[in-house]
Image (cartoon, rainbow, N blue to C red):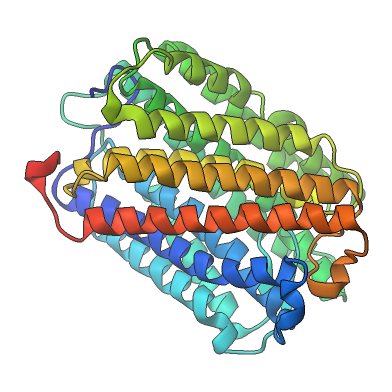
Length: 453
């Protein structure tokens, strides 16, 4: 199994340790997110939720789950990718990792360290207590420093291969968007109008930067797709020049963010609709052609060692397409909305899972078990598809989002069946997520250069 075109070399020495540190932080975030998602699924499952006295904790659990499984996981993985391909590994990088790790720990345990006051605003839901906000600021600070540090990393000895330079361009564009997103949050905070209602305040505060950050996730997902398509495939999915062109098109809409901040105050109708339209029409402009090219490029590969990688690629592309299609069905504030973004989020996560399986031995760890990796990907990706379809079906029946227990209004058989499908699919996905962590733990618990490092 060889890299035929699109790949980033794994650095040596301190830079490799820094990369492994960001990967471990990303995996830590999934451990925390997985623990609280069990509470969420049970609180939403018909009949079972009636047995539980603590359904009121659903929103607190959902806040922590979303922040760990989306914000911390994705930005930590961005830090991991930022360390690949170039030199680096100095004190600034390790300091940023330490600050981000401290922030992630505070976010995880915030419900036990202060008032339990959850607000379910979009993108970065919050617990209004000091520990949570301290953790959030620390994690974002560490991520921002890592993004800037990653942009300054030197190229590898001998320079980039054409495909490597294309992927590095994709990573760099994603890191620039991280900085744009953080700047948008700061700009929004400094120009916020007086909003007395706390949920509305946080919704407006995180609106602009939250939308921009989705472009980072899409850029890095495309990097993962091209890389996975190149491993063991019979043809390159794209030429490097075309890949850079498409990745440029994917990043360009972000430049509208500062313009929207300049034209409108946060909370103005133009501000809210502008960022929503930006993501709706700009988010897939590059993902569609890159995804199709990656699917085509991975055809015909026959080596068994690359089977988990191709499966991760195809499941990711299917989920991304399904989630994007459901986005056009959204009407009102029902669970069609989480159906849409769960499809997109899980698509990126599956791509990262495949890339992790590829890179673990190159970081000096053991080769993951391929059969278990295939089973894990089917469980996580297949369960997530059931979960997404269940949410979409429930949304068409009028089930409201961000509710649990009796508040869901599951008074008819179709609603009960739809949300049961959601719970069953989510449960299977949780098993797949746990398997991923177990496989990674087994590969990382003992280094083995003689086993494919």
